[in-house]
Amino acid sequence: MPAFADKTLVEIHDFDIFKSDTRQQLCDIFSDLPDYICIVLIYSTVEYKPDGRQKINKEILKNAEVVEFAAQEQDRLVKWIKRHFQDAGKNISTNDAEYLAFITGGLMATLNGEIEKTAAYSLNETVSRSDIDAVVTPVLDTVAYKLTDALVSRENSKALKILDELFQMREVPHKIIYSISLKMRQLLAARICIERGINRAEFMSMCSIRHDFQASTLMSTARKTTLNDCRNAVLYCAETALELNSSIEPESRMIELVTKLALRDRA
Image (cartoon, rainbow, N blue to C red; front, side, top):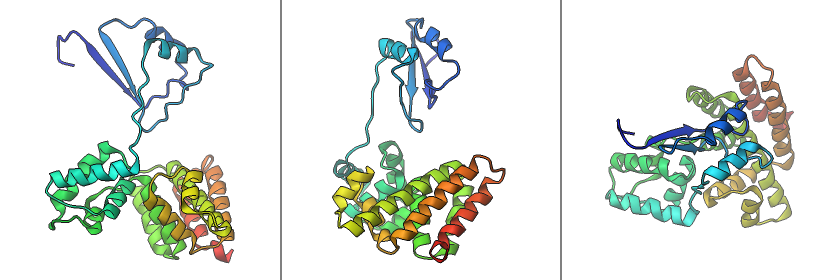
């Protein structure tokens, strides 16, 4: 990176080269890179999903190394969180460590800063759940969980307030509907598991859920609703997702969806 260095590093973030209209140009570039250039393609919000039928995939595998940084398993992640709080002179319970991992998405790059921030904020020797909620910025999935919890608990005003917070976070409606739809499908799966006597471990495997805390929240929420309510919620989400593709007022469609979900048992 410094001027006059022997090598040049180029980072490209979240660019899906497999869907790009410039695939042939990229193939030409990758096959004729100067020795002094190192290109790193970083995928964090966009999935790295190569298509083996495309020429560009063969060019990448011929000249590059694919390295996956997988998310840590929950037990190891919780130990890591506790150790980092201890380094900051604080303690945290296992449940609250799981909660912190859950609301931040469980990625160490994000957790590192949030741990420092929470440890600095807490006035007590042990960090509490209220300390975490006060300063940690939750990921979209977590906010969507809070939204679904509010809807199931019939806290409709709270649900609309959370939706407004998502808009203020500048989250696009298409991302919001994806997250809400996913949670409603998981809620339906949880309700089906309850109806059929399927245990939580099988439910987690079925829905690819990593955190016990996340599964517990879904199962607890599912017990407060009915199978028919869950099915209707999934259908409403699908209808809204379809409407968003042609709507000129996507935020209004999202408000209508939340209202429908709040009133679905009376429909």
